Image 1 (cartoon, rainbow, N blue to C red):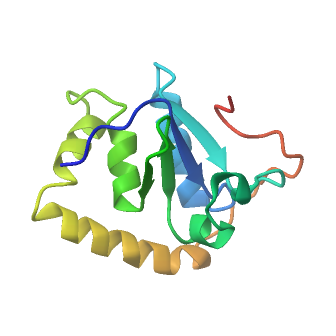
Image 2 (image 1 turned 45 degrees about the horizontal axis):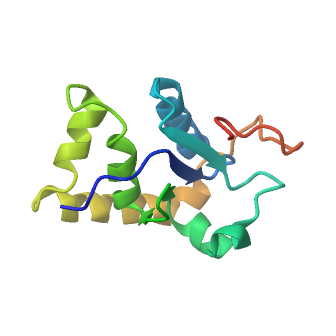
Length: 138
């Protein structure tokens, strides 16, 4: 099992993807302790170079970076996000289950399948064009 992330955790998501944005913004609304910082990689002012990760890599799979600089990708990013929630909640329980030996490979496969079709999903209608719509920006 990995070490828990050091909060706050920056979550990098594609705000133009309706499914991605809805899910990540739901996490932001549930975060009562300010443990998550949501960063829209589709925003005009997003600079991938400042994180040392190519934009194409950010677009390929979800990333989360904690305060210590640890980078979580794909299913690991979801695990890191879910660590922000108590284990008594559904998201907290998901955080416990996702890394189990039988569940993890299936989750990775499911995530890869989603990532492969993500570009074909409906785009978000109210996409930010002014660069000031980051949620939880700090």
